[in-house]
Amino acid sequence: DAVSFGALSARLDLDRPCYALEARLGEEQARTPTVEGLAAAYLEEIRAFQPQGPYHVLGWCMGGGIALELARRLRQEGQEVAVLALVNPIGEPKSSARYYAERAYLAGRRGTLRVLATRFLRNTVQGRKGGAAALDARTAFIIAMTAASRRYVAMPYDGAIDLVRTDGYYSAERFWAAVARGGLTSHRARGTLAAAMRPPGVDGRTSPLAPA
Image (cartoon, rainbow, N blue to C red; front, side, top):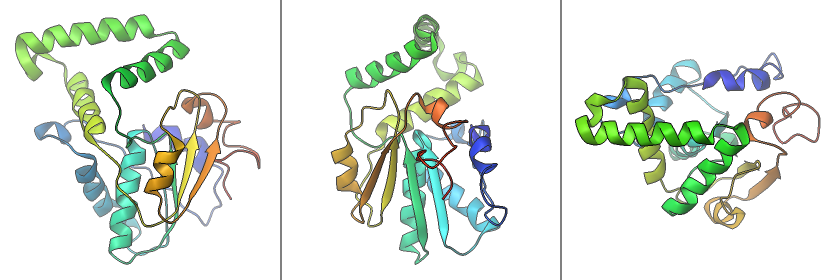
């Protein structure tokens, strides 16, 4: 959700424009989306606004994986990536049990565990009965993007990474240290991801998301 970056972008200097990219409903449903494919498509949009670097790239959750692949492509083209910041990024291989444990934790924090379980069972039954056509467009979109997220594995990146981890994020720091061949700077943000993306999470010198 690009709106989530509103509080952060409002705190940037006036000479540092901020562009947020968001997956458009319907486009990725016609095929099996991949994180790498989404990054390639978004790169074309970025070039339309800023054809030359340096670039400051930020992504969270699935967007973290897309941001990593964007930065990789930019560097391969000889462009400068001044900052690559990943907030609770996807990319570390994990078991199904660990995946659902994370989802249960986050849902429990929001008090929506029962709603999540009910929706999952309903969608599973509908999908088995009628396939993707039986699901509403939004649900089908979420399922496709979630599948792409789970398939993605982050490969080594020859630049530096700023990693921001919040409560409920279990990906090992050592995994990202191995990915970031140009060096890893790890930050711990208190609270949930949603809290880190809004005030006071983006305020103050101690915040890892505070503009430099």
